[in-house]
Image (tube, rainbow, N blue to C red; front, side, top):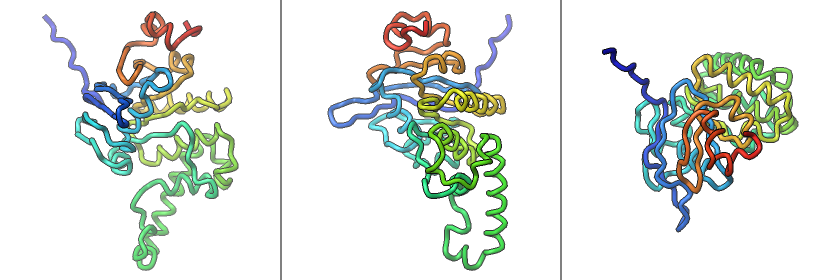
Length: 261
């Protein structure tokens, strides 16, 4: 009798994760495993707790209870910059670029602890600082080219379109060489041409081994590109399965999918 194949450990897990805002419980004892190498879709109506869950995982918001594990390590309570160094990046539903800086500068400033950030480094390590800046510039330009933003490198980030700002958000995340990226509604407000570029880049990164967890209200996007699909409602997990299983689930059909089925 052959042994069953060993399942790879999850790249990211939450256990009994809970968040209260006064008497209101936004996330209620959620436990999830996110599979390495997957593009996981996270769906649910407004107020279901999706973004609150993201904020706790990404270190933006401390949980009221529960734990977060990254690569098997308990990272609960770590700040976003510490999680970024450990390989967890996230983007926001509304992009947050430094509007007066150029697109290139927005990407270059992402890595923490650059030599030029300290007065002593700027004064006494000018050669090392120049070499570091050249290396970061080359890496940032490679990423911008991958994201089809290299022609806009010198443009102020506040002057690009909303869809291009979504691509810039992902470019900034890639400066940390993340193993897991949390994307909050990447397709929202993006025209079809830029959505197609965004999807192509997500899938290319996924083929290279990057794992994604994506909050998205566009159910066509979720069903085409995400597996598994997880649904939250009223702060609890109510479904986990494939896109096809989601299409056939009567609760999701009524509450989330509507005419997509």
